[in-house]
Image 1 (spheres, one colour):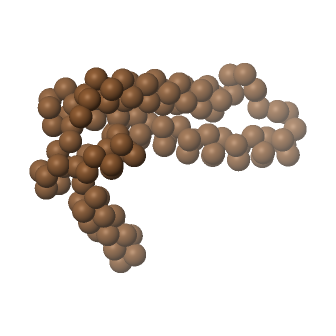
Image 2 (image 1 turned 180 degrees about the horizontal axis):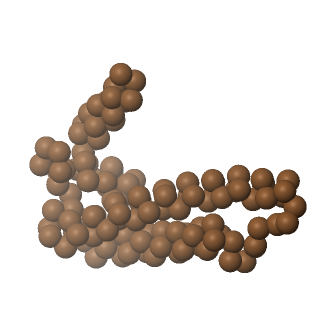
Length: 119
């Protein structure tokens, strides 16, 4: 594994996510587009705020995952699953470079969350 290439990819993604979160936050504060005096337009703006909030939250979550991956990379544990300690599949890391779980542990984690949400 080329750790320098992985680090560069993660750093680039971190910068993209920071930019997205900053822009969404500015839009939520209506810095460039103040709330309209028109009530109907305000409703549309508030609906857009909900979407922007979701985008911001998603960016923050992924940013935390990227930061974790950078820490694991620096510690020499980047490719080790936090669930079982086995190696994370290279194709999984290529697809989701900030993942911290092998496919088996990720699927098990999803199953547990899914059951908890239903019952």
